[in-house]
Length: 305
Image: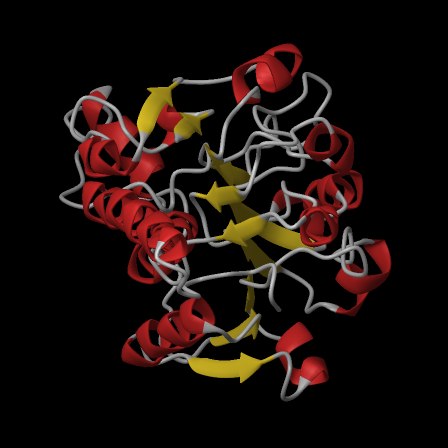
């Protein structure tokens, strides 16, 4: 049985390996696969493992030997699941592996904005504090989280974990699915929902206009949930005080993306999920999912939903 990993470098680098897959078939692992090489590398494969490589209907129609797709993430919007169903191809994902890591990164972004760690760290390393006659020196305000409100869009595993951390900081949690008006008016608004055809770009000017003036927007879910041009306008105007993003609509960002140059937009390169512990869970679950499929069991199948 031929097993092909299309973009293993997103999960496995020098600290991990794919050895748990070796007993299951003949494994070929690529660090990354450009679009023009996808069909060539998938040829004859029974099982294909992908993280971000797009497997469209057009591609799946040209892979008659393919019976199984493993998405090495919780989100699986890069695979045409409906086409896979029609063609009898099983699709699995890795649910809930990154809950703690993404919740932690959500607050890393929030704390970067409220406590300005990079600004003050740079100030000290560049000699600013040493040149000062003050035992404490501040030019940028630090914001206390206790007493502030946090709106959460998407109240699954990650959303609930974020709420738990927020409560520990003394914040009031407003869940969008329970009270959208209150959530939108929160001091901070964080996104943890999957992207669908219906909600792409729903954080747009009309949505932002309803938000509290000077609020902070956090997104560690999917970049396409936000209309980036509208967010840029809101950040430039001061309607929103800041944004913390781990995801963008195109990754790496397009040269004309208006967000990276903005000083009040804090962006990390889609790294919320990457602690070694979470990636090790992905590797183990990929092997477990495929083994279960080969044994005729249903395990983490998203094509059956």
